[in-house]
Image 1 (spheres, rainbow, N blue to C red):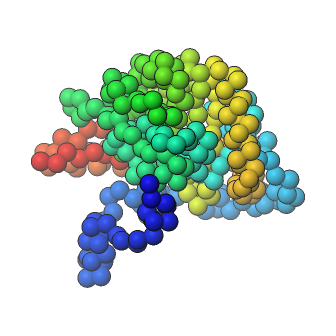
Image 2: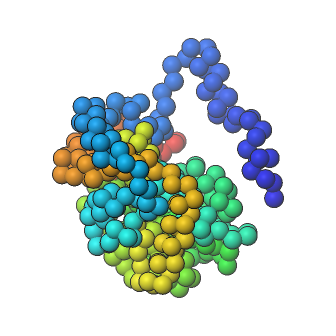
Length: 331
């Protein structure tokens, strides 16, 4: 196996990157249809409110007393948002990508793999590789009318003795599929039988279109589940780099063991900015969530306009359950 230095140092751009750069050099306007940066689409948290939050947070964090799991007030705010968990089950991170790396690194073993959905978020391969793992894929199924769902038989078929975790993304990126209660119940059965942790990514949870809710793995009898979320998508604040992990499950010994190891790993870096931590209770407040509701309405209106425009041209684009992307079928 190559080292990361050998893999990542060639600097050779992909054919797509080369084509895009060539058009930029010629001055051709380029519309990026897959960028995840909300600011490039005019979706922003109000600047005046953010300024006030950060002023208050700076005052609150003027004395440095680090906690490897994250400051208690911030973890209390996350626990209240999540519901049904204690602050000690919450660990703060510099965004969801770091949370993934924490999980993958703690679970990694030689030759191990993590089972991820496809279509998928392209960063999974690099995060897993950086943690010493490989990605193994299970394919989402597309039914009549363009609706996507988790094929649980496919999930179980792809599990190997080297699989260390199962990743569920709901709402899924990019299909917008929300894992149903029945799908999660079946996933819980499979994960329990194979003794696999479930990593549940809900970063688009607040942006729903056809789904009424997003069921969480904590509602099912899973021995061990880790839920990931953060402020980048929810509040359109990717610049804050703030996320969290909620660790829960019926196997209290395993949950506590993981939390202890996670605290040790986090204490090695203490990466989360103290002012950002102090801002979390102010964001995860009724006033903060009024802004989330405004952003959700904006995303929904744009999604409806997008779907109507495609359908007006005879292209049958299905309304996603949630998220910020729509899948356009190619002829």
